Image 1 (cartoon, rainbow, N blue to C red):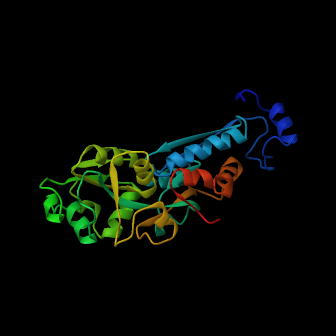
Image 2: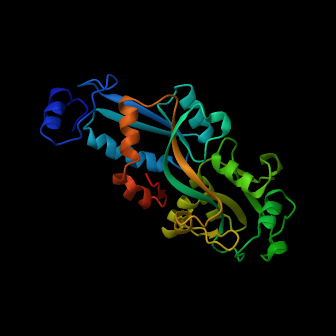
Image 3: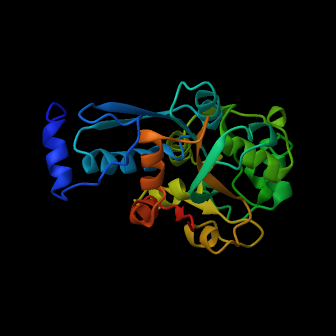
Length: 280
C-alpha cells in the first residue's frame, strides 16, 4: 500500500481485522506516518532491516524503519542522546550503561576466521593472542605455511572488538593490525580474498557466508566448534547477546516495534540469518 494511503483507509482495514490493532498511545497518531530510527551494531543491522520490512508491511505504510550501522558504541550514544529511537548493541551492557533500557533480541558468538586454503586447523588462546599482538609473525610458527601473517582487526567502537580482546586478555592498543575494518561483512570479504589473513567476526555472519560458498573457515575454541549450534547449546565460550537499547521506557512505535521484533513470530528470521533466538 502506498504511504499516501493511510488515515481512514488504514483504520478501516484495521477494524476489519486485516492488520495489527494499534495500542491506544498518544505517541501513535491515527492517519500519520512516522519514521523509526535505529542505529548501531553492524552485526544486528541485517536482522533489524529484515524485521523492519515485516513491521512496515504489518502497518501498511504508517511507519518507516530506518536502520544505520556504525558500531555498538554509536548505538549506545545515539540512544542516550535521543538521536535514535533504538540503539543496536551486540554485547552485554557495561556498568556505566545501565541508565539505558535494554531488550534482548538474540544471541551470537565471535569467532576466528581464516581463508579456506589456510592449512591451519586450530589455534590455542595463547597462539591467537600472540598472532594479534605481533609476537607471532609467520604462519609456520603455528603449523602453517611459510608466509607473513596478515592481521585484520575491528575498528574502535565495535563490540566485536570488545568481546574479542576481553576473551583473549589483550587490549585494543596491543593489537598490531595490517588492515582495520568496520562491519562483519568487510571482515569476511577481506579474509576470503587474502589466503594468509586472520580476522574475527560474528559467528552468525561467518557461518551464513561460509554456507553460501564464501571461502572462509571458522576456527573453534578450546575444542568447541564455532557454530550457531554451539552458541545455542551454550558450549561456545565466546558468546554474546544482541540487544536493543532505548533512553527511556519505550512507548508508541518504539514499544510496538520492540514487542514485534522480540516475539516468537520473528524467530524464523533470526534463524535464517544464523543467530540464536532469545528465550522470551
